[in-house]
Length: 210
Image 1: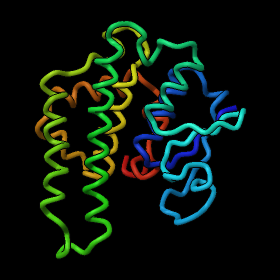
Image 2: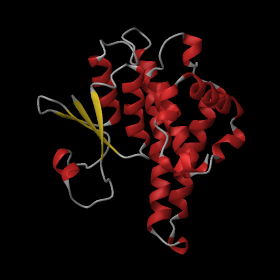
Image 3: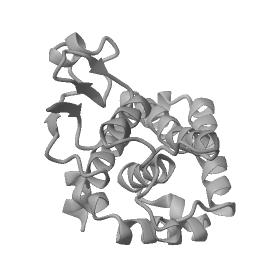
Image 4: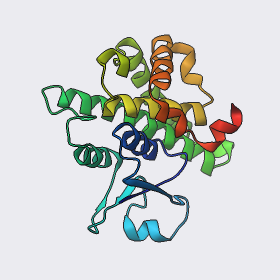
């Protein structure tokens, strides 16, 4: 049994949850919700960064962050499934890093606006993070990833990461990304239709809106 510590809204934890589903590891991976805003608790003991996802293995090993978690899950499923073993590996890992960067920047901007009254926001910082989001969205819009159906295989780590980052923008940025990225919207719609685990891992807040 692998214990997956995460939170319902984390795009990184969602990556691991979707990966476990598409790899057929649902019976092996048990989700255990963690309070990522607490200043102490078991997550701090398990991971000095107190970040999710954190995976607890039967042999006592502890694994983090999401990219390492996906490597582990892919290995448990036999390898070469969501992370290619061929010459496309580095390209797909790079695109995963790009997709994760959308969430990284969006979260940094959100922390600034959540933790300070508006008159004290560091707007230069917020604009810098939004610029990272916008440029990366444009890159994926101009050069869309294939959908799982187009490659006739389960989604790879880059596709999973991108879908989760777009889902996070829907959750925290009211879906504003959709206005200027029509090809990316179509890609996201196709991913959602082709990967049931996407809707199965929706944050409760998103389910309440639907």
